[in-house]
Length: 144
View 1 (cartoon, rainbow, N blue to C red):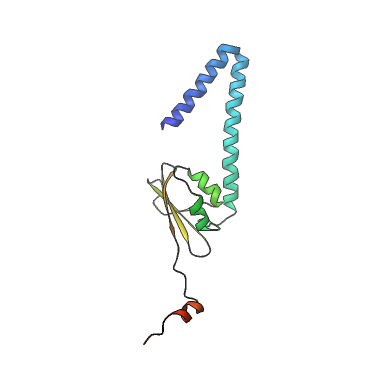
View 2: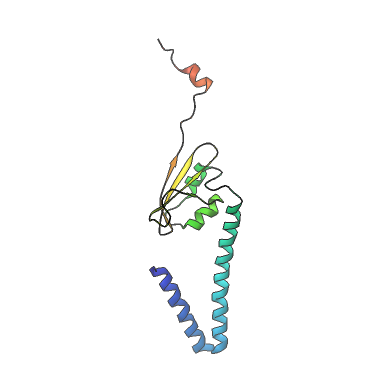
């Protein structure tokens, strides 16, 4: 357990105590209702993200360059899945830390994200070399 989850449990317990002291059992009922409502909001968000990700191939993203621009250090895996609307392809062994996921677009570009305990630590964009076009070949000096 990390400090954030410990803090949330302690804050919930403190709210329950304060609710009981101020209003008795109706206060406890209101606080419990608020906690359940908050948990249902997070559960609904998670299920919505997973439902959208289920309709997209694993490891696919519309544009790897746009994903690279939108990523921020410290966001969780669920947030990245919401951005990509896809579950990333796991590049490391299951349950190994750090976890490395990859999302690739149709042009061959891909973003590799490194997560430590579910939080984004770093990411890297790879873009394949652009193939030579006819105008590039015409402008190149003639080989002798």
